[in-house]
Amino acid sequence: MEKVVNVIGAGLAGCEATYQLTKKGIKVRLYEMKRIKKSPAHKLDSFAELVCSNSLRSSDIKNAVGLLKEELRMMDSLIIRAADSTKVSAGASLSVDRTLFSEYITNEIKNNPLVEVIDEEITEIPSSPTIIATGPLTSDKLSTALKEFIGSDYLYFYDAIAPVVTKESIDFNKAYYKSRWDKGEADYINCPFTKEEYINWYDTLIKEESVEAHDFEIKVFEGCMPFEEMAKRGIDTLRFGPMKPVGLYYNGMKPYAVVQLREDNISKSMYNIVGFQTKLKYGSQDKIIRMIPGLENAEIVRHGEMHRNTFINAPKAINEHYQTKNRENLFIAGQLSGVEGYVESTASGLIAGINMARYINNLPLLSFPRTTAMGSQAYYISHVSEKDFQPMNTNFGIFPPLDIETKKADRKMAYVDRAIKDLEEFKNESKE
Image (cartoon, rainbow, N blue to C red; front, top):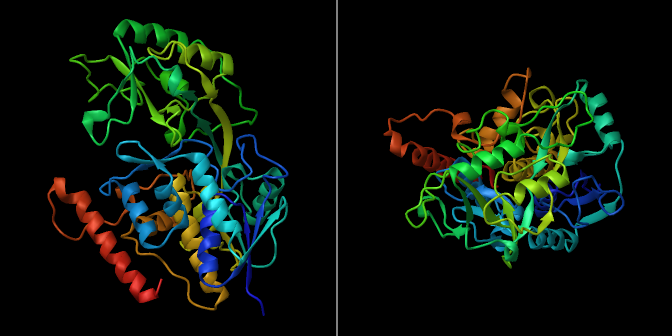
């Protein structure tokens, strides 16, 4: 009997799961609806479109997400290979040219002879082996079907997209290149405020209009909170958050606050405003951005937007294999599964793909070591309390405690060494 798996959604998790399945010789029917029906946030027809930031966050292996990326490299992740191949300069983070990144993955998937790409919206859950990886913007009809299947309400939050401006419109008489504490290359463009400029800008910001959400209740994930919502918490909240001036002195000047911009494409013609995800109306965005020193004449090529992110109550619905508890041949991966972030979504797709392949081949499913970033994430979302569940980026706080005494300065590296060692042993033992 032919071994075939349905993968619904060609985002990061869906493409990663597809790739892992085909490595085991399993055919995939990859369903993607973008060519016939796009969500409010998607613009491209290609796969693995990054609709929020173009950054996959820190490359420092002593940072949990840096470790997660290294683990994915060890496991031959298509997504991380694409990111490494299309990266742009961004100091200590791994940021990509989002168009080239998407094209790289699309070409890999479409040229794979084991993959059949089907341009279709799936509105019901197929009864045959399936991985659902439709992401945080799952269509209404499939959301309804999933809600009925899981037997509980979805949780959701709103994710905000940061604006992008052209480099040539930035005034470098005021703006300057520098990375915080000169760590890595000076890849960030910095726009410094004096105290007077900041107070005037802040007073204007908190009076501007935002786009109203239509849902009854809005849950905003802390990591994607709109900057104008952060501002309402107090005049100094932004100065101690995305606009902190620490380590960004320039020509002996200590800014009162700083807006940073990061490359958005390889040609370095576009920059996104770091931490400025927003739901302000477009006219308000124009006003507020052009009050930033150095951006008075900014050409805004993409405004910030706000869209709903949908995810399941993971500890109720799935196990650490990303397999649903109600049905053995159904897996859920990506942000829909309750993970948060590009790299975390990729990891969930990799684990779901590997375990679906093992399910198809009548092999026991694999639980990745909890001491690894991938394993700790999978364990966390499937074992945390169902009450008030909310997505969380990978962090060392969800790893098991170290079983050796270490100095505080050495603790993170101890987590890393243990994870790499345990993942190597896991690969050898499981032949993955």
